[in-house]
Image (tube, rainbow, N blue to C red; front, side):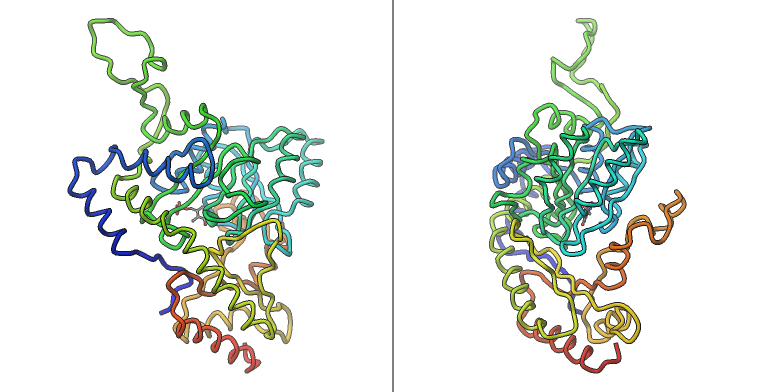
Length: 390
Ligand SMILES: *Cc1c(COP(=O)(O)O)cnc(C)c1O
């Protein structure tokens, strides 16, 4: 099967992991801080906090910003469930802002309207989580302006977007947000197996995230409570935290992968450009690129035209699988998931995201997608759409 996304592991990546396995530390050694520094430097942020997943990073980011019961977090419905679940972990409520029909990112117009309404009802969000879907950056300047006006904090979910740029600068520099979160799951741009990282320019936020990453334990003299001199107090638990640590092997893999990040993104661009050309004449909507951004092309979603007598998304999806192409759908609107439905969300809540859900299919895009595999994808799409049966 040809997957929709796949990691690219080199001999050097393997060697770096082996070196760590032979070293003194498998966890809590030198690799993690080096990895954090390397990513922070790459994206031009002051601090990086590496954890075992982007899901964990979103959780500790919300905690660091003080999200709790009675608060609410808004995100887009067209995302992976983790962008919303982080609020539930903190005992807060979640709400959703519909997407823009061109970029598929959170709609600034919908956000603006929803904020104005929420202000009247005294229900403004504490945090908004824009998601750079497929690696295409959101309109962060507009979101920042609204965050200043309404007083909410911003966490960028950049799980798809390491290596992407917004207005010529790297996503993750937190110029327009408090915190940015990356994922290093194998389908994402670079991988550590499982892994995530939060960047920020605020030292207090970085410190709070570090504390939550490791049980809420500190061994910093300034943070510890005074205790009797004759007792040994080499650490104290000063908050409730978790074990969200990433291993040394993972951090070493991440450092090695980072060296090829730009090359990976360039290869993804070359594939996207080829699709743009080769699928241009088919009855499909291809991804539009905002000139303000440089996408990392984590995903390349095509949209079939929905409605009667038009190609059906489900038939095309099935047809691609029959031809050995394991496409995917990103995403089912989060609020349509049974867990969120049980909180009262109903079908029709965000019409654009539902339309997208009924039309989109993510076709293969990853650095080592072979020429023959690529040709097979294009041929299959052409034949399927020409047959009129899908
Ligand atoms: C993959 C992903 C996550 C979660 O990442 P993990 O590292 O698997 O926890 C969160 N948000 C989005 C948008 C994602 O695509």
